[in-house]
Image 1 (cartoon, rainbow, N blue to C red):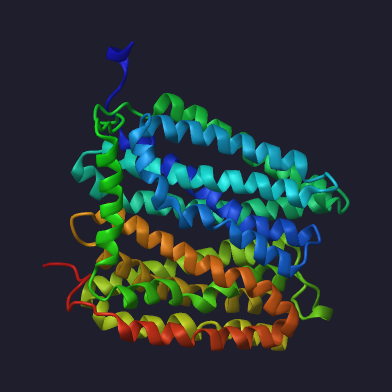
Image 2 (cartoon, one colour):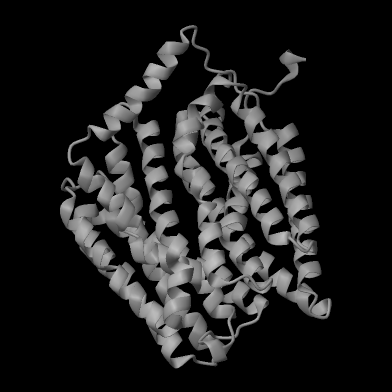
Length: 428
């Protein structure tokens, strides 16, 4: 049987579907869960606190990534995690109608988050093993594009579907969301079955075995020690944790703000309208901002564009100050304002991503980049946890002004870091 296994396969057969499948559970755990809980009547304080805890698996992902290397193949982890995520989605669907749904669904989303983070580790490793070096470079844009498409499907189409079902079921919100999650679970299981048969069996995809278990532990410790010995490590950590301090609070409250009634300071949009505004128009603007940001940095380098990116990213939050004070009823105006904020975020976030690449440079590039992503997730998790409580104390109008004040650290930390001239610029 081993001789019949295909060691190489056309990347178009599996790279797009693999990264689409990687994006869906992250969007469900981080974004769609907020919409679900808001529609089910959970308070903003509880939504922000408990859904922010779901970031934890991505925070500590570097701690268990070596074990994915040591046990079984990357292919095994990819396929098994996809089946597990599909089962978790179906379980969420079944527990939504229950009286104690908040506790049960949070537990299932927690398991899904750990599975998704493990899937990320395995998928990224499999990508490098399943493709030749020139193919890895050629398909970087493809994998990124299909991950972003998953964001549009998750935040946009999935939420719109839930909104349509809410209307068709006569306002039966638990039933509508149960059907939505069952549909998503079925799709995800189909992805798992597809990858079970289509993913190649690279010869290099095998467990990394070490006879000396103490050597593995020592190597693991050394990677972290070397990271924290980097020059200017305090400035690096400050940048990773505080560059998105305001945005981390804003992102948790956008959906509740859009859904809440006008009498309490929200915009009173329907579930479907939120899927269009924030999940589709907003995500497309985010992607365009990121693409333009990446292009211009490739022309003049990150050092040249860092401060314009910082300024545009954080001043774009004014859009929500406008929306909360004016509460426009024109759907087009709302979409333009949300798109403006998301474009600024996507444009400025390019600087953050490139800075992580700069920090990770060196012998342990992959491991150090994973550590950076852990701090990135921590920088979103901790401020996000208190954002709901702050909003309920201040109301939406003052909350979005607080968000502007929260961007002050984001203007300070870029001044602390050193960026080499020409970094990020395309070599002639």
